Image 1 (cartoon, helix red, strand yellow):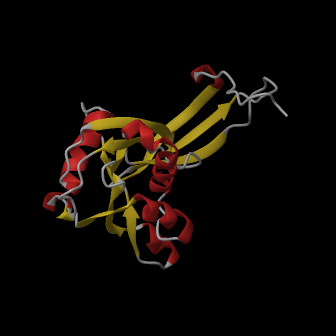
Image 2: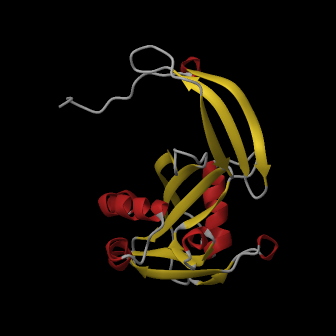
Length: 204
């Protein structure tokens, strides 16, 4: 057993990109990389092909009201389940793409207002991570926000972005239980709710 978790020191000199090309462009970008990388023994790997799909960077925020011990979650259609013959209206935290020139924090505050009608009074950074590192370039900036949910909830979304969003205020205990019983299957929301279970005092 190692005494503690450590990252191997790496930089871009440890990756040799032989060729990079865009093979599809739509809602996102699909790129194909021909590359090799430094192995742990110091040698170079063979040249391999990897496809990477990217829509950009995302800011996601979990609005929490400590006075009610409640969170705001959204429900909306997502296409992810169609690949498996499922219809997926998912329960999620608030999220949106970070526009050019905007910061993750600015985006978190903007999306909380657009998707939930709430004003953020305090923002806590949870994590910045890659959603699915094997083939997706999406980078997620995750936050929890202190808000007043007394009059929150309803239907939101921007018409020009074809959004139809149901925002609902629920007890935190029920939201956490939904992580275990299958009502919540969105990764970022699972992470944020379990973080909040350990850090609620940070937003008290």
